[in-house]
Amino acid sequence: MRFVPPESGSLFETPTEQLRARLTPGASSESYGREWRIGRVQTRDDVLTGRLGFSGEGGVEEIWDDEAKDFRDQISYRGVTTVFAVHLEQFTGLVQDRAPAIKVDSAIRALRLILNDGIKDKTLHWKVEAYRRKATLSEWRRSVTRVTKVRFSLSEPNPSWKGSRNVEDLFNETGSRSATAIFENALGLNVDAEFIKQSQNHVDRGYGDGRYTGVKEGPNGEVTESKYNSAIGIEEQNDELAADPNGEVNVEVMRSHLLELPPTSAVATLAESDETEEDETPESIQQADDHAEAEIEDRLLQGKRVYDEAHEVLGDDDAEGDSDEPDGDAERELRELREIADTAHLPELPSAGDNGEGDDDK
Image 1 (tube, rainbow, N blue to C red):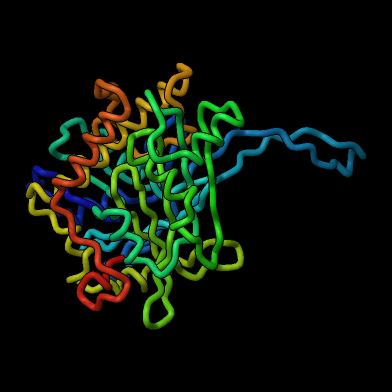
Image 2 (cartoon, rainbow, N blue to C red; image 1 turned 30 degrees about the vertical axis):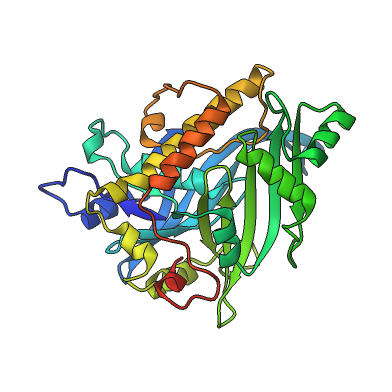
């Protein structure tokens, strides 16, 4: 992820000093009824590491009381946390995915809300964004070693099916108005299978959503996970780091990995805030994606066009409670999203065999 400093600079604090001052133990902000908090932090070698989490809903446990020789009720609160690291000079960062309890997008939004808590002037707001790049599906496929998972959320077309006969037959035989299909194999999938191709064709026509997961294997055996949203042509890339037996990545491992990223890598470049149109583009794509999926979710509740999956990612306007949504049907909205993605000045996606600067992307 990258941290983009506010448009209006402070006369009293540098961006680095702002990050240090706001990412402190006890700093908090509310999101979707959850009170997110930052736990103990440490700073070394220009990298701040810490814990981020929220208290889960309270519950009643029945525990044994040896004195009473009986069970008694006790209220308990389950804490859910993850770990993160922030490079205070390059404004890049890492956060561990602890899905389903804490997804990366949820943690990124929580960090953004905490950084901007109590600040009403949006020109003083920090942006915290997942690392995303524009690419076609074929370009993304060439960039990964293998595709390990494909998930489709599909809905009935209006007015007719075109080039998706197998999907049409499935809907007709089951009487479905919507469907979710998941294909998964750690050793690799045949993405050219006819059903997958027809499902993707249906998504391209604006009647669904396609999510692909693949892995990139480096020359030294390092493995990077990459996720691709075929509805809007955006790649999200994640690094795989060794975890402790409890499933949590050691913060020292995160610190070392963040320090290994070269300053000229794509992540470091994206973190530089030049207030250019290129810097604003990923935020625009993110907000457009949020509005489209919110509209789709609304239609699900109305019994019209159905999706069973929606992002938690919100733009800055959404975080402030702005409920404006784009007009028009989902097919037109997805076309508009693709136009936004096509005009975005984002780095080109290299192939798996390239040895240029793109190989340093994290």
